Length: 98
Image (cartoon, rainbow, N blue to C red; front, side, top):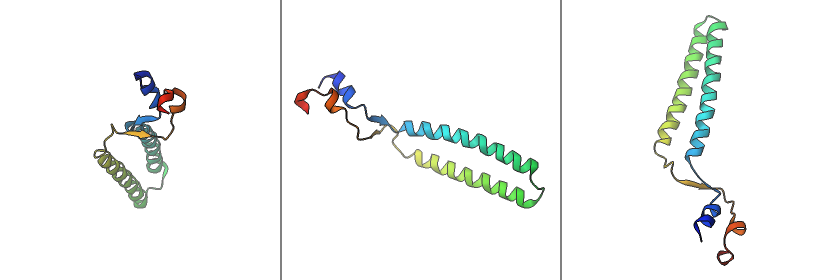
């Protein structure tokens, strides 16, 4: 198989860090929306200890989930590739390899 065919044959493989980049994008959106929500709760919510307690619990649980996910991601080999199962072998591979 030539280099050109090999490159086209493995078109359905991509590294795991693509998922991490997507997760980081969603995490940024979550942080913006949650910061807005926290500001709204504290600014316009009732001045009561339950408001502050639920806000603290929200921040605590969100931080725990994010830190737990980051801790797990530290153990994952992000250079490993994911195969989607889509094969271009019939389109690009030489007939002798089909």
